[in-house]
Image: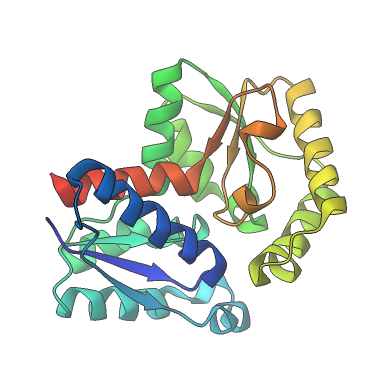
Length: 226
């Protein structure tokens, strides 16, 4: 089994899901008392918000480098937005980074969808890095058009889901946002923030939903057992 390094804490609530999914997945494949050999570097999310994602490369680099020195053979950044720096980190550290966007795009292509609705942080929805990666896999990306809607998603991720608070009113609002994306032509929905699956899931929709946390976790398991 390869040893994986997880850069977590962004946020700690979704890092719990990663730890659970990865250990359960390894056990399903290997049985007995076999579980994941992993190292977690849990960042202080407050530091990233203070510096902003634009200025957080060194925080992520230091975390990845620490995991490498501790014996990790591959790295997983446990947040979609952190993949703003995934390619640069992989090149500078010279070690594999399991890329959440690439793995999600592969799953979407397997199902034959071409136009996706994307929900995530403001950075994920508004910056080019996420959209461009998906487009290299032949996918067309739709996000909420209204700035007010994108700001609302960002607020709830920071003030609610990021601290583990599940608000039923927020869930209904997210369902409405997703309905609007479907009306604009989305064939499927990507939950492009690792906190969003805490709030909504495939059970809430008829349209196919891609949970990036689960997809990423499955890819991490495949890497560890390859």
